[in-house]
Image (cartoon, rainbow, N blue to C red; front, side):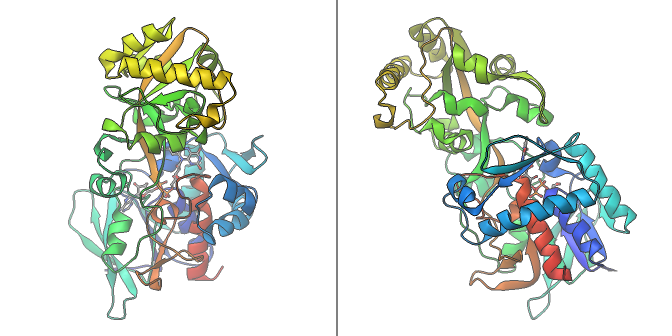
Length: 445
Ligand SMILES: Cc1cc2nc3c(=O)[nH]c(=O)nc-3n(C[C@H](O)[C@H](O)[C@H](O)COP(=O)(O)OP(=O)(O)OC[C@H]3O[C@@H](n4cnc5c(N)ncnc54)[C@H](O)[C@@H]3O)c2cc1C
């Protein structure tokens, strides 16, 4: 048995923040990391730390977000950024849309992670890598007394602590939970994040009576080149089809099923419900040149998202007429007459200024598909993190099925669910704000 004041489960964004803040407040901290090194999805991310500027902005970005946790996110974000800077993190403000604060982890998230880990270890914290928390321990009163852990290839042992902060990154890599919440085609979804986030925080807390949040069927993700393409884990951003909101998305029948202009993260959730979780993204040369080919910078390398995806093996074609494009895609499973009818109706509606009146309305970003050559790419959603999870209160305490805090148990980052729902306004900000809140509630900051 080993004694510590707090065990933090997971050394990604939320876990690193919670561990360093708890230590600053005088706690003896043990930080567990299942992977061989700290970082989690934070380490794979673009490192763009952002948040809605005001509560009204957040409500516009995420209309179904949590009514009280959302405002806390907005309120605490600027202080969280200043706190990270006080620790030496270089966060460069980026020019962005007026409804958000955006900072880039300079020069990259790897340096940000190394800085927080150095602060933690030099401050006397214990970091155990390749060590998973497998269950929570509680006393007869239901208060946390510690966790059972399992080192990579070793025997389980127990760690004692009156406080546990769950920061294991949600359940993006748990097939059973994805099948339960994301439906029939969940097995086809690409894991677009760290592969160690298998819902361990969720399962451990459920086992001692935790409830579940809103947004269980929602995830934040993006459209990726469809199989047989396999995107390298360390290069997700280069292949992400962020510009799907400017194209036309159809299913295997060649039929539109969502207002693409709602954004690529919404499109990803819509494709997840189509046959075999496959969609086809169609656009013309104007969209290709302006949006599908990206310059490097802001945490990403330069990429040609269409031709690099085709080179990886994704179903794809280019052609000088829409008919030829449709014929070229039919062997890839796309019904050519359906596609031709859809594109013709779409282009007519755009020309007439009536795209919002299509059977599936297109309310914004009404780019026509009229400038040859034309492009078609098979896409499948990648799940970056899950938006549902454990319910928390404003102090990041995990709530039971009746809404009461489970004494000593906290959750932050993607383990805490329901803050965003269906739409998205930053992932890293969730770990920053609620990781700090957890430590501060437990240790009085
Ligand atoms: C390609 C990509 C780009 C992204 N870009 C951005 C961006 O620019 N801006 C933004 O805001 N967000 C971005 N995100 C999302 C962001 O990275 C996540 O929202 C954020 O990292 C989630 O933080 P977290 O602490 O919940 O999880 P993570 O950072 O993933 O950390 C979870 C950690 O828990 C560990 N773990 C899991 N189970 C256990 C266990 N049982 N015991 C011990 N450890 C465990 C995991 O190994 C992992 O290290 C991006 C993500 C990806 C993949």
